[in-house]
Image (cartoon, rainbow, N blue to C red; front, top):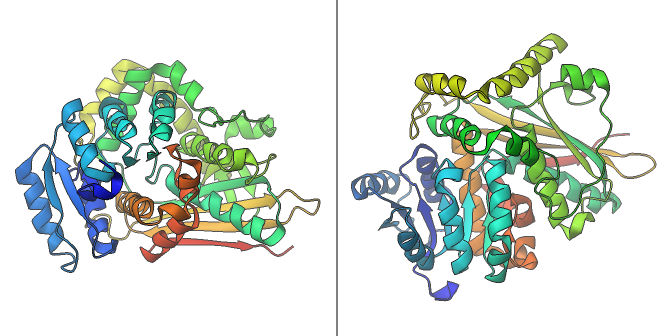
Amino acid sequence: MSLPDRKYEIVLLGATGYTGKYCAENIVKNSPTDLRWAVAGRNESKLSTLVDHIKSLNTDRLEPGVEIASLGPEDLDVLAKKTKLLITTVGPFHKYGSPVVEACARNGTHYVDSTGETPWVLEMINKYHDIAQANSAIIIPSCGIESACSDIMVYLIVTLIREKLNVGMKNVTATNSVLTSLPSGGTLATVFGVFDHYGIGRLIESSKPYALSPIPGHKDELVPLLTRLSGVRYEPDLGTLTTGLAAGVNTSLVQRSWGLLDRGNYYGQNFHYKEYATTRSTFTGLVTHLMITFGMAALAIPPVRWLLKMFVHQPGEGPTKESTAKDRVEFRAIATADTESSERATAICGFNGSAYDFTGVLMAEAAISIVRDGNKTTAREIGGGILTPATLGQAYVDRLRNAGVVLEASMLAR
C-alpha cells in the first residue's frame, strides 16, 4: 500500500503511558485540524478513556482512531501498513523498540521515538538503516529531550553562521542551564535496563563522540588535565560548567547530524561539539562530577541496580502535572566560527513545562513535520534511513516555535 493510500497519517503507539499521554495531548493541541491519526496499544478500555480525555482539549480536531495492537511482529506489520508514520513511546527501547523499527523500515513507514539509549540506536543503525533507506522510511530515534533539543539548537546556530558568514564551525559548547523535572519510572527503568542488557563495554563504545556518525570523525579537542579530573570548566557567556548527565548521549547524536548533513561539510570539517551542565560554583561542579562518575560506576554493579529498583517510580508513573506546573527546561550554546577572527554566536532552546511535556511536543511536531513538510526537509533529500531531528531542518524549527518552544540564535558582538 502506498503512503497516500494509508488510513492514518500518524499512529501513536504507547499512548496511555506516561510520556505517551503528553504526546497525545500535544498532537491534539497543535496538529492541523484535518490530521488523520490514531492511538494504539493493548488495552482498548484505557485507549478509549484517553480519547475521551483528549477530545475535551480541542474540539475542532478530528477524533483519533483506536487501534488494538501488541508488540508481536504480525500486529506491528499490520499497524505499520495502516499509517504513514508511527510514533512509539514504549520503552525501554532496547527491550520493546526493535520490532517496531523493523516493521517500519520494511514497510516504508516513517518513525519517531523518544529514546536516549545510544547503544540501542547504534544497533538499529547497523541493522536497519540500509533497509529503511531502500524503502524511503524516515526513522528518527532520540526525538525527546534526549537529544532533540541539543541537536536542533546546534542546527540552528550552524545555520545562522552559514547565513551570516558562509563558513563552518570550529566548535559549539552547550549546556542544559535549567532542568527542574524529576525522572519518570520509565526513564529510570531504562537506565537500569541498559546496564543489564549491554554491559559496561558496549556502553563505553557507544558513548564515544562519533559512535553514531556515518563518516569517520576527527581527533577531538585537547581538554586540560584539570578539567578532565574535576569535570569543571568556565565558558564565557555560559558561566561555570560541569559534567552533564546526558552529555554523551546528546554528543553522539549531534555528531551523527554532522556526518549526515553534506558529509560534515555543512557544520564544517573542523566542527567539535561539547556539552555540559550549568553549575553554581566550582565546588558544586566538582561534587556533581564526582556523583555522576561514581554513580555510573556503581550502576555497573548488578546488586546496586537491584537495590535501587526498589525505590523508584514504576514504568508508566511519574511526577504529577501539578508538581511540574512551574518546571522549565532550557539549553544554551555558544559557537565559534571557523574563521581567523573567530566570530561567535549564541543559541537558546527553552520550554516552560515538564521535560516529559517537552518530549511530547518534540515528538509530535517532528511527526507532523515529516508527514506534512516532507519535501522541505533534508531527511527527504537523504532518502530515508535512520536519521536525526536536525535533518528535519527549518520546517521543524518553525513548528516547534509555533508550539511554544523558544528557539533563538544570534551573533555575539566582537
